[in-house]
Amino acid sequence: MSSTDHATRLSRERILSAALALADRGGLDALSMRRLAQELDVWPMSIYRYFQDKEALLDALGDAAAERIAPPGDRGSWRSQLSRLLGRARAVFATHPAGSRLRLRGGSLTPAAAEIHHAGMGILTRAGFGPEEAERAWAALLSYTAGAAALETDDAGFEYGLERLLDGLEARLS
Amino acid sequence: MSSTDHATRLSRERILSAALALADRGGLDALSMRRLAQELDVWPMSIYRYFQDKEALLDALGDAAAERIAPPGDRGSWRSQLSRLLGRARAVFATHPAGSRLRLRGGSLTPAAAEIHHAGMGILTRAGFGPEEAERAWAALLSYTAGAAALETDDAGFEYGLERLLDGLEARLS
DNA sequence: ACCTGAACACCGTTCAAGT
DNA sequence: ACCTGAACACCGTTCAAGT
Image (cartoon, rainbow over all chains, first blue to last red; front, side, top):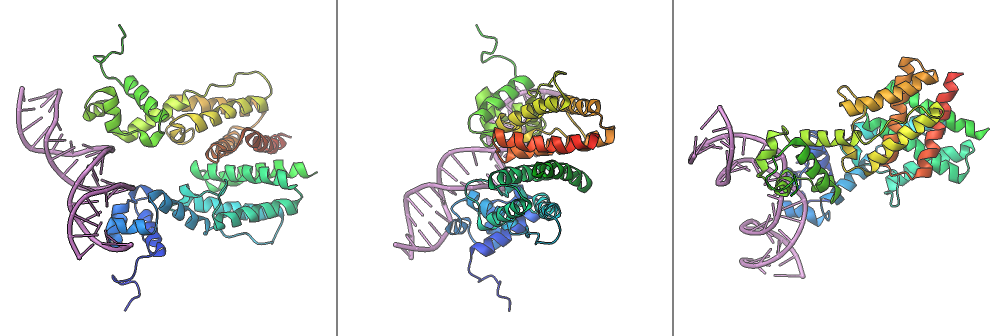
């Protein structure tokens, strides 16, 4: 009676969802093409019809992580908007199974990653930064956030450093 | 005529040096226990007499990276001392084959990592931070540095963000 | 032309057998 | 008791053979 019984056609979505479930238990290391195929009840090579190789699948998982970071909206000061955005980004970096594969900077951003970038740049330019300095400020904020997630800083520690960085950025506006 | 001919006894040092050479070409992914054993002209299980498992060997490589970060000395202001220390840390994070395995924070620091921590804390407390806030400030600076290395920020970008963070920290001293 | 799965060239690590 | 290397339980991916 379910639409996901054993006969359901394979798809990128179904593969990604199974991959995420696999990585949720046991971490990203537990995700193998063979184990994933077994979980989906297909033979391993079937997955290669939807993803060029494992690297492409991991990239897609990283993009799925980016989709979990919601833009912060217009409420509050530019500082509090950035705090909300980066707080969410940090939570995803730290807790999403593919958080370590999440790329929010670089040449070829996925649509979800580009949206985060756009949101951050919007807040910074509305705050008064020129486009060039806004880009540098965004890189700094993102570096700090990714690093804090990687080093497993606690909430209070993360906020302390973020406030100091925002203080330093705000001083540039006067 | 060399002391490292084929008959030289195996040791942790010799294993680490070969592992580093292997990771230098082809990155950390190219480092396998079997390939490493082949390089050393021993059978794979010999390595397990010196390292419990691959994880322990990678930890030792990370510590070797920490040893490459020299303390900055007493010259200049506390800001410039921190800039030198973190600039070197960033260079090692980014260029050392085991940079991604480098752990400078957490419960059980290796001697080399503890020395870096001690140097950073010394600079911050001499600058006027109390021990508790110095710890938070150090965590923030290290987060930023590790993140900038991971995101492959360029030199100018790294320095821009570091200066902003230092500005925000300096404002806490008055 | 397409689909299949056997096979290739690897892994990290265990453990039985031999000395 | 110790050393050895065969073997186990995996990998990601290719490609020959079959339909």
